[in-house]
Length: 197
Figure 1: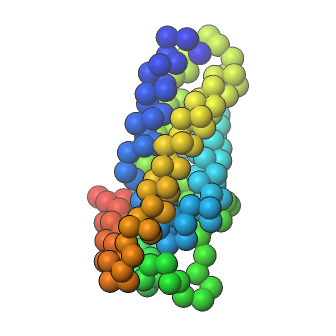
Figure 2: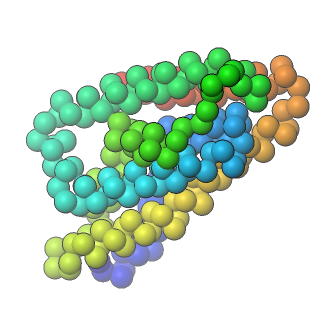
């Protein structure tokens, strides 16, 4: 990787991981409903899933989406269905007083979600095309990309979970908590609809 690409890569990593999207809305919701500590596996699962996607995109998996556009639609449909299901569960949670059996996403569930998250694909595939150069070892360059996204992305997405957890304490009334949780549920549902546009 050309060292002149490191600053643009850092900026790209920050913008892609700090801006609103399915992962960050889900993290804020999980932080709100379950607290920051119980959301930590979700945070690391996102990071791991994106790292695997970067590696797979670097090894050429991204070209399958170019060759078969129907795969893009399959990812969108599965992603929208999953977010729709999460929106319903969030709507029913009514804040911190959770129904019996409710739990945050696990590490592996969060990692697997990345593969049906169109924003994750829209981040990883261009990263490979934009920040690798042909005359350098590909494995090393992919390693730099993974490291950049981990070092910059992890604090960025953690902030969303922390904001959700902070809102728990701010929303002391049950009515206020329910309103906030349902707004987050509606945002999650809206994100699901945007997958299909």
